[in-house]
Length: 142
Image (cartoon, rainbow, N blue to C red; front, side, top):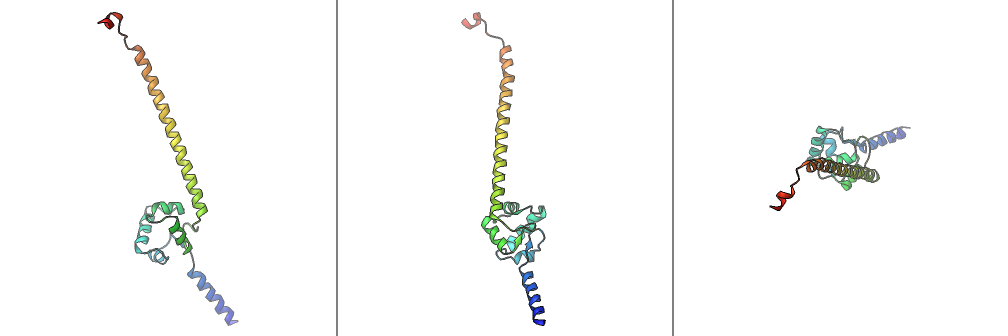
């Protein structure tokens, strides 16, 4: 009976040692405890977190210098989470695809607006050119 009890306690401590560390709640010491995150990286993370909490891994990667997808995957494997979620390359690819689609849509909209603006300018210039006095035949010969 006592062996089972000690075994259960040992499992609880082992589970606690592998507990996830959420980037939005972690202290500097907890961040430093993640393999690959040193004092300078934890300072960068904390400085960015002061501005606003990280929404997701894509937000974390974009705001913290020196962190890319490979680094994020390593941090996640070591127990780092963003809002309780581990890094997923598939989720990251989906987020990147949505971002590219949104940028393409914005570019297309901007090009359309530019074309419409040019058309309005051209249309506004036409009446002015039509109302300008035409040179008479007598002044054209001189």
